[in-house]
Length: 385
Image 1 (tube, rainbow, N blue to C red):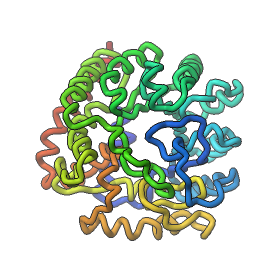
Image 2 (tube, rainbow, N blue to C red):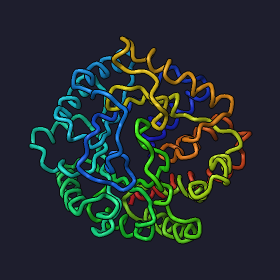
Image 3 (cartoon, one colour):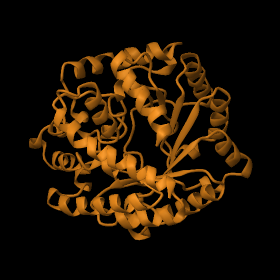
């Protein structure tokens, strides 16, 4: 906890005061190929793309060279399914040599098959692994992930990582299929040696701006009438987390998830984040360079592309040009429709908004302080005992 405060929270607070001179991370969808058929994913459901071409190993090395030059320390590798990119371990090793730390978000379908040599590179480089699992009940997980092999393969991958002392984070999308199974999943993940489990509702706009959103996607979230049941499930997880060595983000999503679910079910609910915050600051448009699988530069993960890495020689300039219009809109409190579907990064944006505008967001600050203090205390106690 102390290292997280020193390495994450204090630098973040200082950037909000002095201004952010550069992004803290580059996020790349390294491939548009996938070996699952998730019901909430445009790629998994085969929605056609307008993107042309695909990122190469050479492109990834160019991105890493640019990151080294600008001293951007983190690379997030996503997909599609990243382990379908043939040279992914070469990319991780190249990043490692440049003192850039990687995070890979995978479905775990093939990770367990990695040769020992490649797994050692992941471990020695400090690469963080996220594995997407929606339920540790195979019937439920097969529905949302589109294949009965999703859970068995993910379990093999989790075991392989845990056996090699590589920390594993499980990512779970909360849907109408699994919302009453979340506590059981956390308990199962703990028994397997998972170090962290993070939850989010279904993003109801397109996860990939080059593809049309799935029809009826918002209906994959729970109904507003089921919110009380969901919140009881989440509070059970919070109690479990206090007594066991597994971390979750429940304390961060409880303040806003009800408003998000209501906004997903009805446009008349308005912008969900304005129910929490009087003044909103989108940290992500300043902190992350988002690059799609064809090299397109996205103003944010949900915004249509504006530029491409193949159209210039300086990543920072390309990114600055890409984000200028959206940044100006947000500065003037004009929010595109996809902003209201953005739950993936909202907890970070909520904390950033509170830190940047503590007076305007006094109610949110008063609500979050006890939760943050309580979490810090039980994390200390868990580590001691």
